[in-house]
Image 1 (cartoon, rainbow, N blue to C red):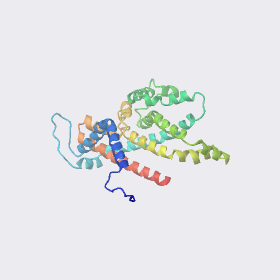
Image 2: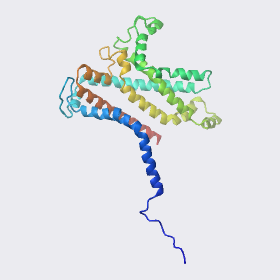
Image 3: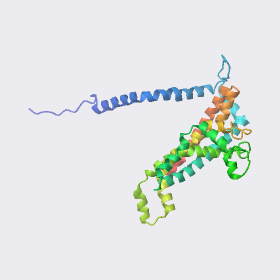
Length: 303
């Protein structure tokens, strides 16, 4: 009597698939405590704001608002104040992001060397990151004070930096770069520490100098980190509100009025909630479009 081997039925359950399914359910259950606050406080207000952008919502007790379709967005296209704030916002975001990256890269390379008191220097480099935006704004108001400011004391001048139409935006940009450098420096420093030392040793054998090592080894190895941190910095900077509000409140004459400051004025000074929501949605769309083009070009160059 011979035994005949039979193939398992195709309809029989796969043990591995059952294990993966159970692990997936367990993972989802473990993530729920973190997902619920995100859905409540991030996704929920986002969806509500998008819906509000298509209404004529205004401030007032028992205010009734109606659906107006894309009318708010049409009004934005002809609003000179919106385009002015958007132009200022782009100048601010591009300038702060670019200067943050360049200065943070230099600082990260310096902190990556075998310096004396390197640990203390790294701690001091992230101090601005631990400071609340309101404190940073108040501190820089004292720095730029026309009479008692440390900047005028050092330069021997009496310039009112925050009231001058040509100097207010550069002054605010300097504050933004200073406050945003720590997180960019930390991320770039982590990327530098992840570059294999064998690559540097290999090019040193070929007699490569400092610039060649930086250009051929450091930058290519840091490309994913650079793309990630500059993208995040741009998003954070274009949506900046608290720093500039505390420092200048958008003045003088709207010279530092970023898009989020303009939206704040429309919503809480004039009560046009629907219009302010449309402004936020429009800014979000433009930011996503700019980031999409930037990331596409970076991935195309990398490939």
